[in-house]
Length: 136
Length: 380
Image (cartoon, rainbow over all chains, first blue to last red; front, side, top):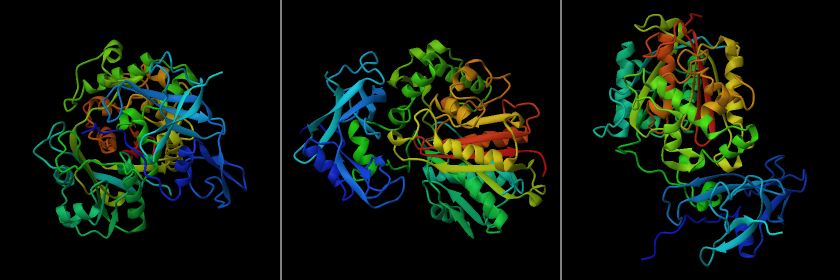
C-alpha cells in the first residue's frame, strides 16, 4: 500500500478555473472589471466592490517570499523539516505554497527573495502551484 | 450601548483541570456549569439563556435541564466565549433573557467525546492551504511572525521572553499546569516545532472547562459573590485562512474588537489595572498589546521584555500563567475570562492589589476572530 500523500484540493464550480489553469501551466487570478481589484482565492464576484463583472487572467507567476514557518513535525506526504510559505504575487494577492528547489533552512529562505511559480502534478487531475527561487 | 448594566454573578472552572480522562467533553461543560450555579446559588430552573461553542446550546440545554428563551451558538474558536458574554449582555439589556449561562468544556488532551475536526477538501482552506502541509495551529498561527519580526527587528529571544514572564505568573498559581521557572535559554533550547517557534513558545494541550452566569446589574447585588460588571465589549472576524490576513503584522479583528470595547467602556489605557491577552502562542500578547493600543507598532516585544507585564510591572498581564503555562484546552478564552473575574473579585492567586478594571482580549481560529470584554468591580 502506498503511504498516504498530502491533502489534495477538490475544486468547486467557483474555483474550477484556477485548477484548470494549473493543469495548463498557468497561475490564474481574477480581476474586477469595474474597480480593477486583483484578488485571490477565487470567487465569481469582487470582494472589494461586490461587482459580478470579473475576468480570469494569467498571472506572471512572479512573487516574493512573504513569510513562512519551517515545520518539524510529521505530516502525510511531507518530509520534515519543510517550509509552509506565503508568497506575495507581483499582481498583489498572497497565497500559501511550498518553496521547492531550495534548502528548507532560514539561511536559504530569505524574506523578500524573488520566487517564481512551478507546477507539480500530484495525480491525473490535480496540479499544485509551488514556487522556487527565481532564475535570472 | 453603554454597559455596566449587566454583571457576572457566577463563575467557575471545572473541579479538575489538566488531564481529566474520566470526563467526556459535554460533562466538562456540565461540571463547570454546576460549579458556576453553586457559586451563585442558582439552579437550572433559574437560568433562561444559554450560550456555548462547538457543543450546541441544544445539547447543553437538554443535558443541564434548562428551558431557554434565548440561545447563542456562536462558534468562532477560542474567543467565542468573549463574544457570548457580549451577546448575553445585549440580550439581558434587551429583555430577551434574565439569567444567562455561558459554558465551555473541552477534552483537548484526553479527547473523550471530542471528535477530531477535519478540513473539507472543497473548502477554501482545504483547497488553498491544506495541500501545502499545515498541521493545526502550531504550523498556521505562526506563519505571519517572520514578517512581523523582519518589519520591526524583533528577535527570537524577545519572543521567548513572553513565555518566561508568563511562567513567573504561573509559579504563583497552584492550579497552573507548569509552575517551574524557565529561562530564555530554556525556551530557545526547547524542541523546534515550526521555525521560529519552539515548544515552550506554544500553548499546552489540556482538558477542562469553565462557565459564567450573567444577570442584570440591579439583581447582581442579591447574589453571594462580589458582582463583576461588564463595562465594554467588542467583537469582529477577519479570515478563516491565515494566508489571507490583510496585514501579517497586525490583526484586523483585534483592531476592531479592542477599540470598540474601549469606546463602549469610556476608558483609556491608563485606566486599565489588569490585562488578559489570549496567548495560544508567544506572539499573540505582542500583537494584542499593539492592536489594542497599549503600545505603539513594534513596541510589544520590548515592552514585555522590559518586564512591564511581569509580576511587579505596571501592566500585569496573563496573571494566571496564560495558555502557555496555566492551561489550554484548545479554546482558551473561557479561562482568560475566569481570571479576569477572579481579579475583579479580588480572589486571584496572583491578585493585583486594588485592581478595578480588567481587559480580557481573545482570539479565535488563526487570527480569524476576536472578542474583547472589559470588566469592572465598581458599582454602576
